Amino acid sequence: MPPTSVMIADREPVALDLLNRLVRSFADFCVTGVFSDALNLRAAVDCSPPDLAIVDPWLDGITHACQSFTNAHPRVRVIFLDRSFQTYQLKRAFACGAQAYLTKKDALIDFEASLRLLAAGEQTRLRSIVSHVHKYCTLNPGLLTIREVEVMRHLAANLTLRASAQCLGTSEAVVQNIHAQLLRKLQLHQKRAVT
Image (cartoon, rainbow, N blue to C red; front, side):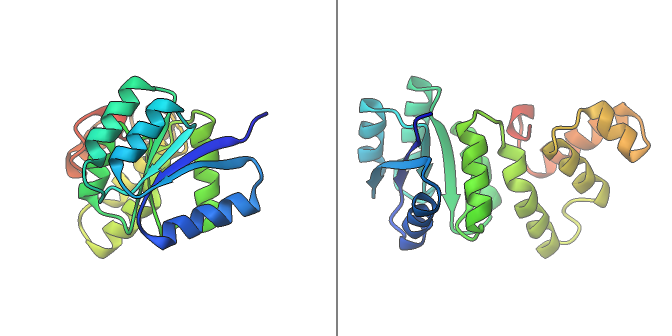
């Protein structure tokens, strides 16, 4: 099986260091391009689409570039790699078609595991943000209820609404309502944004 090709657009040394450690540790990843701006990344993706495109959400024009190449090359998995968890950037990532939102504070093993799932075509959007949302809620008490966090964890574990309801000892309709509350509180207006 050929290695997973990765392109990155990021100016921060910590992101490049994380990627270099990943490539050195796991031979099945191959960096095919490193860019400091969105335009060059977009041109490179159009010429030779990678399996994964890791982008810094703070780069000028990155949202437009991601929307452009995700529409043109649907097999390219886009990952927003942010400095720290921020709900605004999380929403922006989903709006432009990103499959994951990770932070530069993630441990190498978590970063590697997330990249493997994404390269395999997994929908890891929620899985990749559960811990960050949990940390954010810890810093902002009262944002999510305990029950909402439990439902989010079940969705991250790929449980159906019915299975989640059984685990929680409640009805499927209640879990569906909690899911709707999660969407509203996290300001994610589409179901696919959290599943």
